Length: 495
Ligand SMILES: Nc1nc2c(c(=O)[nH]1)N[C@H]1C(S)=C(S)[C@@H](COP(=O)(O)O)O[C@H]1N2
Ligand SMILES: [Mo]
Image (cartoon, rainbow, N blue to C red; front, side):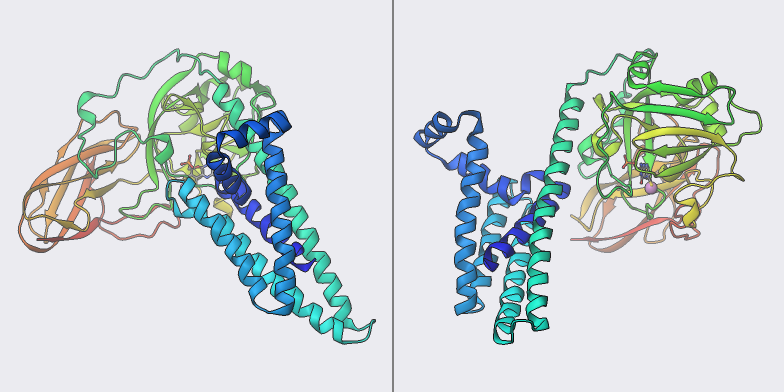
């Protein structure tokens, strides 16, 4: 029985890890999927004939029965010839991992849930059988015996709880994703101009000027991604307002929506880092909803709250001036991906995400900086978070062939814009790079400069000049408390 308890705990934790990490990599789903794909047609037909639409449930029950039998055997083996029982269980994990990775087109993360299962199962069977051996040698009331029974009960209960939680998490995720894919976004009342032809230089290795949703960086405190049903979502605007406003999803979708290209950046981005992305957002200008509420003249901040309790404090002028601060529902032509805030988030040009970009937003409290603080500001990050002028070298990376080549990268200072970028090699003279067409002052811009690379090791640096004429500072500052500064410098070996 200890073999079964151990595998239960291992499988449970593996399922739990998968539910949050990569649902397709669940050990049961991977093995079950592989069996479905590998089954000969007659087996499928028989399964469907016998079990109908319950065929998948029947398959999972079948796998579970085989697993119980194998773990029963592994438990016996562990008693007679330790550690071979544990080895058998670990091997089950390895098999699951290999199948999951193959099915995930070789993505190594897919191995994690099954490996967790194997390791936990193997360690548990070793521990429990060990405790059991000790307990069975002493008197009936010995503390060893109690300890053994308690740990066995704990392992069993933990395994059952892990399976239950992973099922709930998976079901919630699937149903909200289904709602999300069924949504047809309304046409914008104010559409963004097409991305200018010259905005994308199409240099291999250079970040695309519009970041595909799948590649968009994700930063949040949510261990479990909130699953919010648009039908039950609402936004409450309250605090220092003339009248409280509650906005529902249907009202939001029926409002005149605006499209805007806005680059979002994380304050934690290091110089040269990639916690930045650019998307075409669709949403209701925040100033319109604030106008409906009637903002008190003494207010200087809006505290936005996420359904998961995260908060951000945004200077009110960034939400009431004419910039494209949006209560966004769309990202690059799709409903917001769940991990990017589905169904509704804030996007504010010119501010780091931690003071502006609340995902899964449900509340806007109009208040004052001297009355309320937000999630990261109570943890030592700066109260205000305007984006700092930055530039980055994307190509070459690491090495380059000798001869004529190109140096290219990105530069940004949202809501100010970028006037130019300069590059120098090996501490030589600064040379102006050519800027691509900027989409707008609220987005990053690509740049490039030709370079004749000679063999050897070379240092390349870049610095930007803001549209307001300020040059990017070379003073090195870490991300905390209000954003990193310094010039991006890379070393390239040319051969
Ligand atoms: N609910 C919630 N919203 C959040 C955060 C968070 O932790 N929780 N993090 C913020 C930070 S620090 C950043 S940089 C942006 C990142 O948005 P993205 O994950 O869509 O790129 O979201 C912001 N919105
Ligand atoms: Mo961030």
